Image (cartoon, rainbow, N blue to C red; front, side):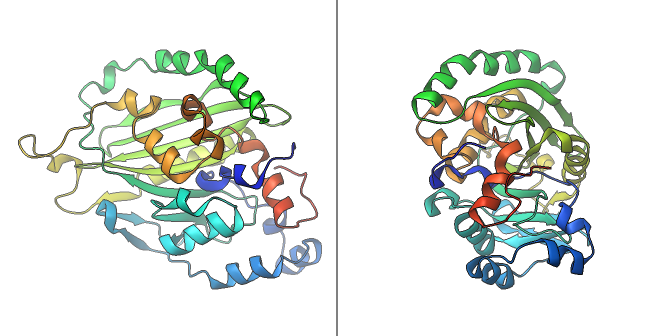
Length: 314
């Protein structure tokens, strides 16, 4: 993988859902410990300081509850921000609106596993009245049309180029759960595996709860399955649900479902969460860059953590 500056590792902010455990995590603990080099002291201390939560987890800012059961665990905002800043080298001011992270049981922030970063955008009520009329292929074409100009800027900045290949999963809206889920495939310069970006948007009365995930295309099946599960794992509290919208008093978002896919709340998330630091300089890249480096993320992270198998990307 190409060398980047540390500030460019805003990559991990939106990792992928439901991938298998790493080669280390799949093995018995003694075998894993024998093969995996010890973590640097500061990373070991961070891992020990985390307090995973399972079961039902309330997200007060969104007036929502995540029903995680015992298959997943949640890190609250303070601890999630520590992971993003101390382990994944995001600038502190770029994670200000992170509300937490979710991992699969048994996985940690140093594994080649998935994670989801949770944010909430007070966008106003997003109408789904035209859900069946959306032309997402046009949205895709519009995003792809910017590839050449975007990559020219990336090259000028010394960053690898990337190409939006297409939908890994076309946008699909579940009207019963008010969940919009889609995934994009990216070709990243210098990476053998294509990147995968999964987005889950849960619509509430006055805003959008987002679960942002980055992975690689070989994990598409696992990530997609977990994304669907997460789309059904969120409930809004009484009075905050989508059906509680009051047209006479509540704010309405300036875009609909296609706007969410093309940018919308996702743009605000990318800007505030710092998914990729370069996006803050090149605004046109926001649409394409929300997770374009999924395939190479773990090699970079593991080099930063001093892991000996840094070049392996599962």
